[in-house]
Length: 320
Image (tube, rainbow, N blue to C red; front, side, top):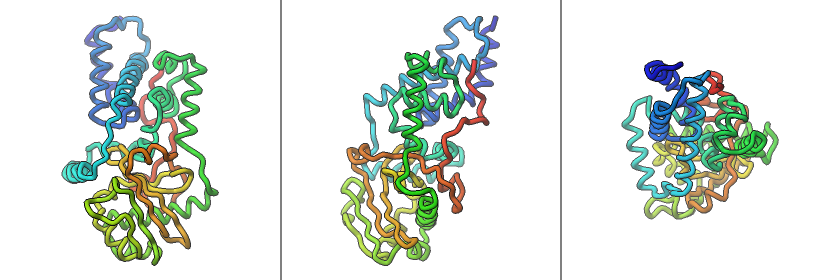
């Protein structure tokens, strides 16, 4: 029999694992903390004497909590679409320390969080629990209130969407990624010379009205003009990572893992030939986004890329 004191002790030992699971399911540090607290409230009110694996049991409770939160969020459909709000996020993150939400998002993979946010609540829960934390489907089935076979199908559909289908051979995507990462590295540094080196002389930048600041032009032509504009966006470039956009390599701008902009990038002759910036919510939802888990020789994974979604062996598994 587990006493309340023993349950509290085991909950504290499981807290980091629970928070890791919750952050991947919710994509928000604050919401993850709320979910973990709700798990304790629910667990402390029921008889746990027959529980064999407390961490697994707590993970199951967490799955139900996160599923409810995801469904509630989907009904609200709260989205950040105003650039003034994005600027506030940039300013806030500039003032925060290394343990902020952006650091958490980078540890998980910013592009992965973006793609997870496109999944339905049950798909996201099934994928995160099984593919990232190796929770068996019979336990996931209890959480999503489906059969184990149906839970397996949910995770399979989610996995297909997370990894997507590239429109070019891996070797071509790897070369494109080097160019995109060189562009992002220069943009983050505000390095005008490096930007001019990676932009084609006749590059064109197009953007919809939602993606633009104030009276910015919807179309800008020429390497110098595009480079000078990009330098002014160094703060926002911190939130930019490579991602597959409709099968081609592009860029997602996602402060705290929440998608705000997508850049469709055309590459010719080893340089960026065109950039199409999309910020309009309806258009963003129509894009097929996937993790760009292609080998990269440029940059580190924490700054420029996202790892493939594989079981997180460094976290305590949620098995019972």
